[in-house]
Each structure stands twice: as C-alpha cells, then as structure tokens.
Amino acid sequence: MGVGRRSLVADGWALVVDHRGSVTFAMASFSLAWLSIVGAVFLLGIRAAANATLPLSMAVRHEQWMALHGHLYPSAAEKARRLQVFKNNVNFIESFNRAGEHSYTLGVNQFADMTDDEFAAAHRPCVLGGGPAQSSTVGSKTSLKNKNNTAVAPPPAEVDWRAKGAVTDVMGQGNCGSCWAFAAVAAVEGAVKLKKGKLIRLSVQELVDCDTGGRDQGCAGGIMDNAFQFIIRNKGLTTADSYPYRGNQGPCNATQKAHPAATIRGYGDVPRDQASLLRAVALQPVAIGIDNTGPTFRFYSRGVYTGPCGGIVHHAMTAVGYGATAGGRKYWVMKNSWGTSWGEGGYMRIERVDGGAGICGITYMASYPTT
Ligand SMILES: *[C@@H]1O[C@H](CO)[C@@H](O)[C@H](O)[C@H]1NC(C)=O
Ligand SMILES: *[C@@H]1O[C@H](CO)[C@@H](O)[C@H](O)[C@H]1NC(C)=O
Image 1 (cartoon, helix red, strand yellow):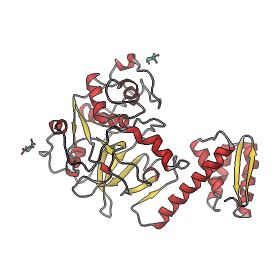
Image 2 (cartoon, rainbow, N blue to C red; image 1 turned 30 degrees about the horizontal axis):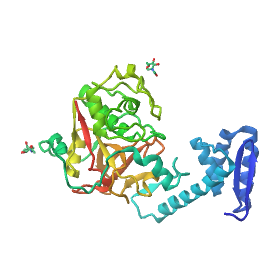
Image 3 (cartoon, rainbow, N blue to C red; image 1 turned 120 degrees about the vertical axis):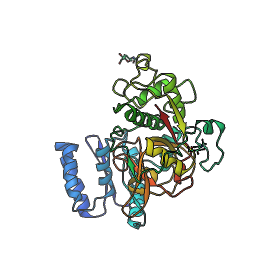
Image 4 (cartoon, rainbow, N blue to C red; image 1 turned 135 degrees about the vertical axis):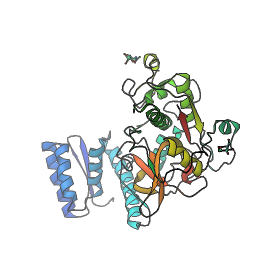
C-alpha cells in the first residue's frame, strides 16, 4: 500500500489514490474533476456505473462508502487511517464470502471503517448482567415468572409476525447502547398489536430517558425485564411520534411520560431452551439477549447466521418469527436496531438447532410482555 500511493486534496475532500493500475488512477482523476464541478451526488452515479465494469481501488471504494453512509473525517490523516481499517475489513469480508462454505454472507456495511475493538466499545455495553449463557441455574425470580407454555402445542412450522402486521419499521440505535430498549419496545408493540389489533410505534427514547430509577442506564445499557417493569409502573409508554428517538440520553420529559399510549400487565421469562423459545415466539414477538461478539456478526448481510459466537449476552434483539430454508436449515428471525442497511433489511436469520440452549446465548435472556 505504501509504494505508489498519492494523496490529493480538493474542496476539502482528501482522496487517497492507490496506483494499482493506470485505469484505476485515470478513473479516480476523472472522478476528482467531476467532484469539483458537480459534487458528490452526481459522482456517486458515475462511480456506480464504473463499478459494473472495472475493479475499483480500495480508496475509491472507501470514497463511495463514505458518500453512501454520509461519513466525513475531520482530517486527511484520520481518513488515511480509516482507509486502512476499511481495507482490512473489506479483505476479511471478501475472503469470507469467497470461501463459499458458509450459510450466510457478509457485506461492507456501516461498520466497515471500525476495528473490532472500536465496534465492541461502541456496542457491547448495551445489555447489562448478561452472564454466561451456558449457566444452568434458573433463579427463583425466573421460575416464578415462567409462563406455562406447555399447553400450547404443537407450534406451527413457521411464524412471521412481520407478515401479521405486528412489527414496526427497523430503526438504528446509533451511538447509544439502547438495544435493550429497542428489544423491549418491539416485544411490547407486538403484544399490543395482538391484543388490540392495532400496531402503535412506541417510544424507545422514553425508556432511555425515563427508566433510570432502577438498573437501566439509558445509552449505557439496560435489561429488557427492567424495561417491562418500568412500563408496568408507569402504566404504559407513549408513542414514538410524540417522544421520538434521539440516540442520546437526556432528561426525562415528564409531560410525555404522563401520556402513555399503550401498556402491558406483566411479563415472563422464557425457560432457557429452544423448545420453550419456539412456543413463546409462536405466541408473540419475544425480546432476546444475544452474544454479538463473533467477528462476522457485525458484517452479517444475508443468509442463516451460524456463528462463530460466544455465550455472553452483550446485545439484544427481538425474535419476530422462525422458519426453515428450502434446504431445511432452520432459523429464527431477529429484528435488530442497527438500521435497515444491516443484514436482511435490518433483520438477521440465525440458526435454530434442535433442542438445547441454541447458539450465541439466544435462550439466556428471552422474555415477553403480557397484556
Ligand atoms: C404446565 O401445563 C401442563 C398442561 O396443562 C401441566 O401438565 C404441567 O404440570 C404444567 N407445568 C407447570 C410447571 O405448571
Ligand atoms: C416535552 O414534550 C412536550 C410535548 O411534546 C414539549 O412541548 C416539551 O417542550 C417537552 N419538554 C422538554 C423539556 O423537552
């Protein structure tokens, strides 16, 4: 990379051009000229067209990626450093996909300029008290609240709560460890829809700002059961429209807090096995904790995710269905809060193996609200 690299700066844009062939360099120069004339939007179109015929240098791909995700760096030095990280990630993603031996593929998504450590620091603290997923101890609190689902049998072969209109649009949590609030709210939205027949987008931000009396800590993480407890105590949650998501923690808006739009009566923990989770998800969307520290998790693009992953719950999502591929591979459908450009339109299908606790700790912290 060091040899034959050249930096160009124009109109505040630093463009690092990698000389891996005269064609590539000519393309970049051509693009640079256009950049000063017609701006980045038009440029993107030209590059997209070029993309179809020419392999683009990593620097040009980084430029495209920056434009797509609206990234600008404070300095040329920072940009050069980010380009290196981007290049390492793209190489990792492409070699994983080229190996062709996995049931899922990776994509160069919005996390492509972050190192593993940076990603972990930004996203890991979002579920508190995750503990080891392999733990077999079930506390009295858990068993007391267990809903006896054994009478609901047999569950259907597949369920998709999205198709039943019980799931709101995927959002992005941004730079805030609020996955616990997103996971809890999606489960409540589903429960309310099933009870009232109406899908109401509820406020994640209210949990982030107002659920601070107990263990939940806004953007520094929380627990879905605590979120359910807050909603019960508060006699409901207001709508997302009246208390919109900001992605940072601020003072609780007491006016909004006093105007709930929907409520729940209680909540239950799903026993830590996949058969129980299946019965629970057959009944309604379920908030789940998950280990998302595997190196491929953040770049998941499509297919059925099979790990590798650890067994400590760091992240939360909402199980909104399950099914099997034509090839017979069984999966859970998880709604994430990393925006729609991550995964399958913001969702992840993750492997559902027979029996046991499942992969990535998905049965460790599964719970659902009752209405
Ligand atoms: C759950 O329900 C089934 C069927 O009604 C019953 O046989 C079983 O004893 C119940 N289990 C618990 C733990 O209540
Ligand atoms: C709280 O929400 C109300 C209603 O939207 C708004 O008028 C008010 O300005 C908000 N208060 C604060 C402190 O943001």
